[in-house]
Figure (cartoon, rainbow, N blue to C red):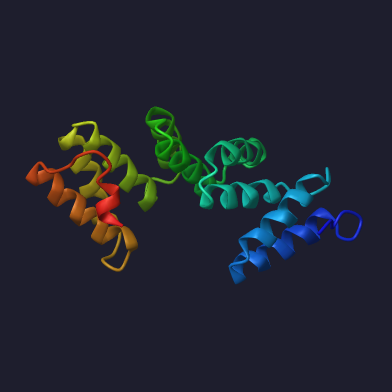
Amino acid sequence: MNYQGLFDGEELLALARLDIQKGSVDAALAKLKQALLDSAAPIEAALETARVYAQLGLRHKAKPLYERYLSERSGDWDAKFQLGMLCFESGESLEAMRLWDEVLASVPVHPPALFYKGLWLAESRRGEEAASVLESLLRQVDSENLYFGRTQTLLRSIKEGTVGERPAARLQ
């Protein structure tokens, strides 16, 4: 459906968020793409569209939208982490590390960034550094945190020497 003229960018963003909550990704994407055509749309429309594209595995479409959003909201550490994940999953590991290090410079206890930094170090055969990062994560989060168990599993793999290509798949 063409929503142009019927809803403004802010309204389309709000409606798209409702669609996402309901699991209607196709309807959300249609609204988000229309919102992006509105020059007055909130910059968050770019972020939501990037997230939908990432969910759909369309990384090449998600990346410029994350970058567009971050050009205006450089202090959104969660979005910066998500862009790092997108880079990591696309094989751009050094760019992912650069982004995660930026996150950690401002938010030293960002469990996802610490975990994936440790994972990258482990995959890069830098086990001692990885273990140090991961052990600091365990000291800083409670056992109910999602990354607590994943971190323990990854540390075990490092100590057993079984960290291979993409052990994250085993951890999820």
